[in-house]
Image (tube, rainbow, N blue to C red):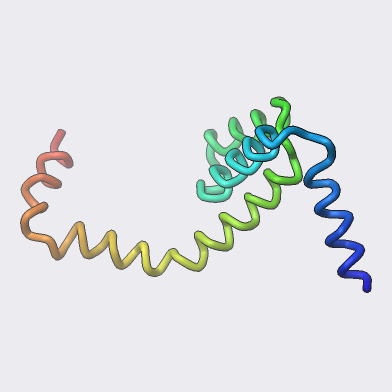
Length: 102
């Protein structure tokens, strides 16, 4: 029963009389923060934007947790795809070498 009241209060705080655009902006900022490395300047700047703009903070913090978990789950797959593109695709090697030498 505790979990039902907790979820009810949480979703009530998530909506909290704000416009849908404010909720989606908070979720967007939170998702961007969740996908970035945590200790960086751009993360700090996005945190400041999240706090000082008129966006939904609860949606932002939920998105940070969701994006962090999704990123953690998909990290091995993304690493394998990136390694394959960088090493095992011979058609891209000259192009990637040219980009590296810029």
